Amino acid sequence: MPHVNWLAVLAAAAASFVLGGLWYSGLFAKPWQAAAGVSDEQMKSGSRPAMFAIAFVLALVQSAVFAMFLGPNVTLIFGVGAGFAAGLGWVAMGLALTYVFERRPLSLALINGGYATVQFTIIGAILGAWH
Image 1 (cartoon, rainbow, N blue to C red):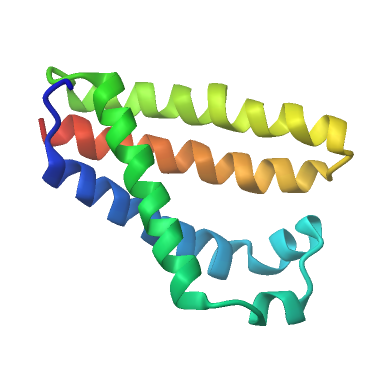
Image 2 (image 1 turned 45 degrees about the vertical axis):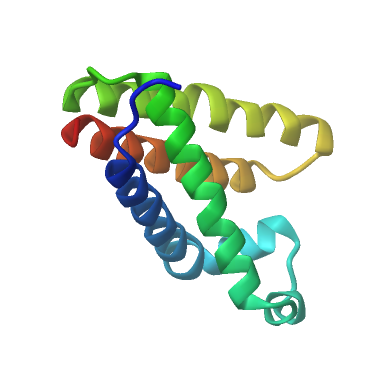
């Protein structure tokens, strides 16, 4: 396994988790809910602690794998650029491609793809700054 700065990975996952809370609970809560077809009742159902725990673990995996992808000699500028490219070019475009065939709204692709782009840009910035 390549050298990984696990503290940076943990910080990147925490930042990703906080961004998700701001993005989906604050900035785009109602537009995302409408575009995704999630009712108020569905939002209130399920175990919130379990959902948040799973979300954090997934952010941790994303950050760790991205750290391995970037390698040990990443710089801030390269981390930001690679994060932006991964978020927009891979994740957002992958979601959009799937949404085309699922007949999902463009607004959902923009909200989720926008999150992924900002998320990976932040992850890359943290990993690059903390090398």
